[in-house]
Length: 495
Image 1 (spheres, helix red, strand yellow):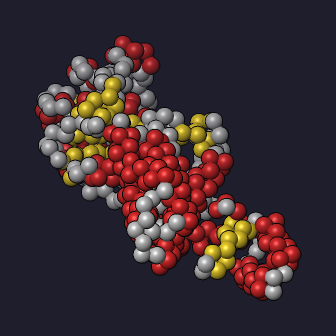
Image 2: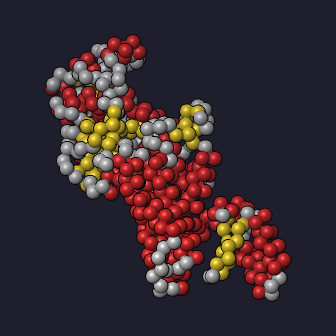
Image 3: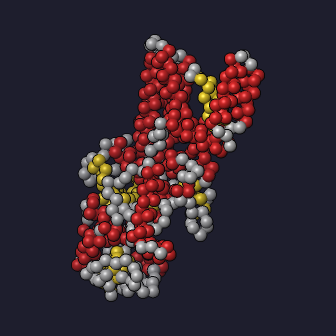
């Protein structure tokens, strides 16, 4: 099955065919650097990171641009409130962005340009639009004339007459038509500014993405993405100014991810349900958040709740525990026998399920990057791995061990595309166990001491005492498991 992508512009799924075979040019709108990134930013970043990973998995060379809007009304206002410069605020929040993305395992883009570093390109693009009579200067401001671009509204499905009824000219604006939008804003006292043919000023929001996208990827992009809230006016304006300047199609496939809600309500600061990545990662693992963000189809709304994130945490625990157990059982089976026994029926079924994962996973991702379905197939494979591991322990053989090792590899190859299960299983489990101890108010020393006491009781065949110790630990949230290598402990979520 070939990759199909839902194109916001045409409102249908289309076969993906990049302009240049084997090469994808992709641009995704980044953050405005005035505050810490919230969970909505996280969804966009993680979703498009998974898309890049999958495109690379399919053999494409991906040139990916993700920008920073580092000059903007919000940045200026926040900087003034904090008594620092706009550049200091932006530098701080860009640093925070990189810290958050690193923890979420979001890969760096090929290019990560900042608006303030591309003033020359922005000015040049505006000059082109003025020369082609798509834009005009008004007392130091420059506006794009929307009515001169007949295709305006195609992306958002709006027509000019609908837009006119809601359009207004704000105080201080000098535009000729309420629909027109700013390409360049004349400097105001105390604001950062740059020199231009129209006097000192700064770029409007929309023009930066066109200028930077075309600088790094050329006049036509294969994919342009962002959140649903960017369709209008941001992406609509990008199309107008870019295509007016070049006369070429600006973007071939428009992709937009859905909103994040909090307990069923729209996320907003006024409702007090605005959650940053930094806050979430104080109490939850980055992989659990990443898994949660990919647990619904990217175009669907995604409702955040502690319960949902806890479910993802538990799912990860089961996956890591299964992989860890499978590795241990493969090692024990190798030592136990050199026999080439045939697989049992249970093992055969498990092997079939594991071998089917790559094709099923790709089919899901080829259907408009359906990470939710791909994740479901991944979890099915983990359950199959668990069944196979138990069979290998019950009836060890060289063949079973090889299939077990191959199954682990198949799962990790698929999970890498989603950016999860990338920790060492033992290290992950140990870290989670220690977190659990804090939650239950215990120490590792107490657990190990209890295990030693139980081991001594078992050696004396004092089964009642051994059972009492085990039940006492269970009551405190600790599960014990006896293995050939000794007794292991884990928090209850691994059970």
